[in-house]
Amino acid sequence: MAYAVRVWVLVVAAGLVATPGAVRAQTPDKTAAATAAFEKIVSAYLNGKWDELPNAQREANRYVARLTPKQRVDMAYIRTTALEFRPPWWKLCRSTVPTKIRPRIWGRTIQANFKPADGASISGSFDGPRWQKVEVCWNPSLVDNTSPQGSGSAIRDHDVHRGDVGEVVVWQQLGRVHFMASLPVKVIRRLYAENKHLVAHLEWYHAGVTGLYHCSPKARRVTMLLHCSTLQGNSSSSEAYLRSCRALAALFTALVLEDPSKWPSVTLPYTTPEQEIEKSVSTYLYANVSPKWTLAEDRAFRTAVQTFYRANADCVLKNRGKLMLPNHLPFMLMEPDDREHQAKRDEWIKKQLEKAAQ
Image (cartoon, rainbow, N blue to C red; front, top):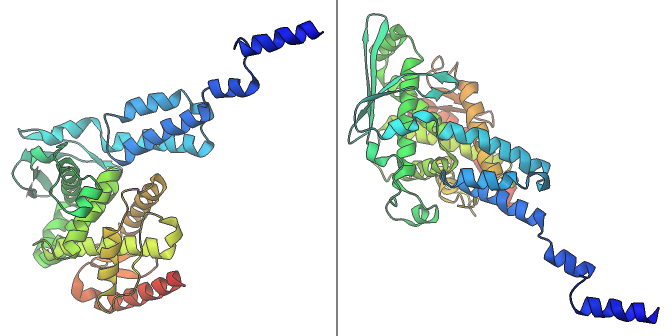
C-alpha cells in the first residue's frame, strides 16, 4: 500500500495525472466563449459592421447550446432584421446611373426611379388618374461611405460616418416616395390644390418616421443626432421638416419619461426648463443618448415607432396632421394647430421629470 501511494505521488508530481482543479483550468470555459461570441454579434449589429456580422454569427453558432434562451431569441431577431437593413437592392442606392429600386416599406413593395444627384429631392408626374413617374434623388457617394462625418463631440462619440448619414437620407427619401405612392392621384391632386402646406408636413412626417423605423440601429441613432441639430436651430430646414423632427422627438420623449428605467442609455435633464419645455427636454434626451445604447433599447424603440406609425396611419391625413403619442396626448404637425396641445404636453413632461427626480 505504501508503495502504491508513493507511485501516485510521483505520477502527480511528474504532471502525468492532472488534479481536478488543473482539469478545470485546462478546459476552456465554453460559457464565457459563448457570451463573448454573442456580444460580438450584438456589437456588429448595433454599430453597422455588416462585414463582421456573418463571421460573428458563425462563431456564435458553435456555442449556441451554451447561450441563454434570451440570447438565442436575440440572435434570431438580429438574423432576421439585419436582412431588412441591407436587402439585395441596397447596392443600387450607390448607382451612378439612373436605375429602378423596388424597396419594401411598411410591408408594401413600391417602385422608385432613382436618379443620382448632388442633393436629395423627389418629384412626381401623373397622366390622368395614374402616376406616370416618381423620381427620387440623392448623392450616391454618401451611401456606404466609410469616411468620418465631420466633427463635434456627439459625432465622435457615436463614430458617425458619411455612410450612416447616407443611409438616413435614402430611407427618408424612400419614405416620401411611399407617401406619394400610397395615395390615389385624385387625392394628391385635391390636396395640392386645397392645402399644399399640409401636404408638405405630411410628406416630411412620413419621411421621418420611415427613416426612423427602417434605418439600421446605428443609423437610427444618427437620425436622432441629426434631428437634434435641427431642433437646436443649427440647420436651415423647412418648417415641415422641423415639425416632423419635433413630432418624432415628442414620441421619444413620451416613451422615455413614461418609464425611464427601460432606457438606461438615456440621461434625463437635472432640471426642468422654464420655457419651451418639450423642445428643450427632447433635444437634451436626443443629445444624451449613450453610444452604449443596448439591443433591448433599440428593439423597443423600433417597435414603438412601428406601433406609432400604424396607430396614426389611417387618421393623420383625415385629421389634418393629428398624431396621438403613447402618453395619449395629441401632436399636431402644423404649428398653429398645436399650441393648445403643446401646453398640455409641456405640463405632462414637467410632472414626469418631477416624478423621476423623486
